[in-house]
Amino acid sequence: MKILILHGPNLNLLGTREPEVYGAMTMDQINAKIIELGKELGAEVKCQQSNHEGALIDALHDARTWADGVVFNPGGYTHTSVALRDAISSIQIPVIEVHLSNVYAREEFRYQSMISAVCKGKIVGLGWRSYALALRALIEMIHEK
Ligand code: DQA
Image (cartoon, rainbow, N blue to C red; front, side, top):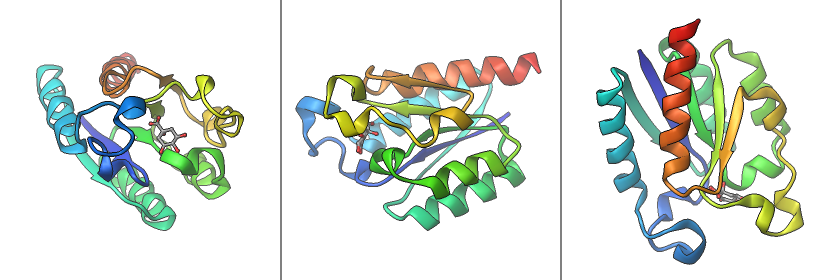
């Protein structure tokens, strides 16, 4: 079983970026925890990050050729990107949307997600644990298939 963890724009700055909103862990620390959890659950986890919409689309297209599923935090593109939504609905593998912060307790423009309707599900507001819970759920759902 192979899973892609995909981080969108500005998530490379985790740890220093608004830690009161996103927590103190760096992206590398989150990735290390998730890779470890993947091992425990019998999945190989690959982590990627990009600040560029097109590169995220490429990563989703590429995942179609090697991954069984994707855990995706599209950052600010969540609220704007029709192109990412189309990329998700163009690939045949399940995608779970995640957010570190509780987007519903923040500015109103964060209430809308362009991608939720084409994702299997979403987990928000639990910090790095959003990724961990999404990974668990994704692995279980793939096994059930
Ligand atoms: C985020 C929430 C988005 O609204 C924001 O633009 C981000 C991070 C989160 O993980 O909480 O960059 O996706």
